[in-house]
Length: 192
Image (cartoon, rainbow, N blue to C red; front, side, top):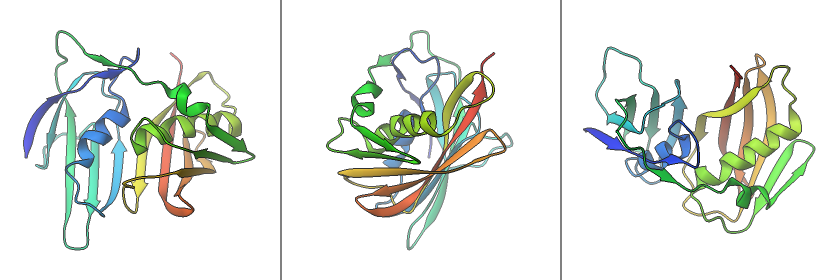
C-alpha cells in the first residue's frame, strides 16, 4: 500500500486534525486489533502519503496495529498542500456540552454525531482544562492514542486524568461503557 490522500481541515484549523487522520486509517486496521497511533510532527498540509513501506525519513505520524493473527505498521508523510484546502465543520461544543467533569474525570453519555476519536478529543480537552494550568500560554494537541480495540459503538465514555509527564505530555485513561480500553496523550505546544 502506498497512496496519496487529500483530507479536509476541520473548522478554521491550519493543520490536519488527528481525528481526520485516525478515522481514515482505522479502515485499514482489522476489526478487533489493538492500535498505537502517534503523531510525531504536526501536519500543516491537506495531502499525505499513507504507506506500509519503510522510508529513510521519520514519518509525521504512524499507526501500529496487532490482531490475533497479524500485525502491521502504517506510516504517514506530509506532502505538498493542494492549491485549495477543503474544510469540514467540527462542532466540538456539541460534545463539550454533554461532558460532566468531576475532580479528575470527564464523562460523556449519549449519542455523538462524530466518530469515537472525534468524540474523545473534546472530552479530553475539557478534562485537561480542569486538571492542569500550564505555566506558559499555548495549546494542547492530540498526539497519541493506545487502544486495546477500536470501539464499534459507545454510549458512555470516561476519561480519567493520570499525569503530566515532563510538563508537556498529559496522559489519561479511556473507558467505554464501563471497561478500560486504553489511554490517550496530548502534548503542550507553547504559543509563539
